[in-house]
Length: 347
Ligand SMILES: [Zn+2]
Image (spheres, rainbow, N blue to C red):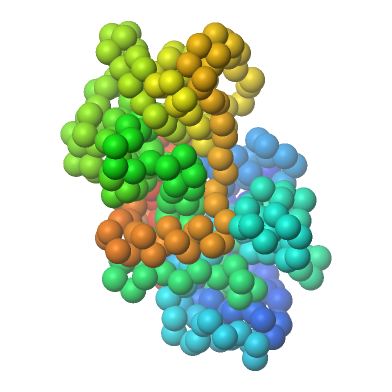
């Protein structure tokens, strides 16, 4: 076992504070990683506030981890000491069933060991990336391309894959028209990835405030959802609408922006059910769908794609003692576009 330094919420809704705990001794197939950077995801806050399900406390959040391999178990073949690696939203899953075999293990919620607020293979709670090191089974460790800045690469592990997976699944590419709804941590990754995949990219955000940012990130077009004309102008325009907003919006208005056979995909999770008008779907053979993160195989594919296209997140680097203030700003959407913790500040 090894003593880890971390920041934790001791109970739901409590501010994060310094915390130490024991990481498990590595097994033959484990990789020990010194964490360099950890992204701050809005879901860290939801989980520490018990918004979705009762959490396990103390909770060490963080599932956008980039670090360097300190040590590997005897049976580890793909990694060696000094490699630059990443860990995303889960650290273990079912290893044998058919779903896993077709690389969609992220949807097997019962077997999935979340990177934090979950249960590890030894039956103990998992603790995430707001800590100085982590022990992870080899099959859940990802290679981070060396040409990427490692701090800005951290958010690829959750925000990046959350957008890459639906863009690939619904075949965004040359000749397709994609709308990204909301320009936050998720949305700004969606713009960069959709553009690099070759799609025509439109951002729909609440006001015109982020127009210059959106165009600089790679969007071809920008519209404000507060302007009713937007929904007239863009009617029937898109093959794919990806909704990154977790606030309540008029889904029917957005479904009407789809072409025949178009799909609207939710990656944000609103608190309450939203009524959908069947005519909006039936009238254009349109689909309403959801998508969550991605498989390990797809996450590696995304990292390699980002390495080839030099795609990282736009970040604000913070020290660990700024984390509570950063969380307050995330809740107010006051970040362009992702906070990343410099874990050196913890040591
Ligand atoms: Zn996340």
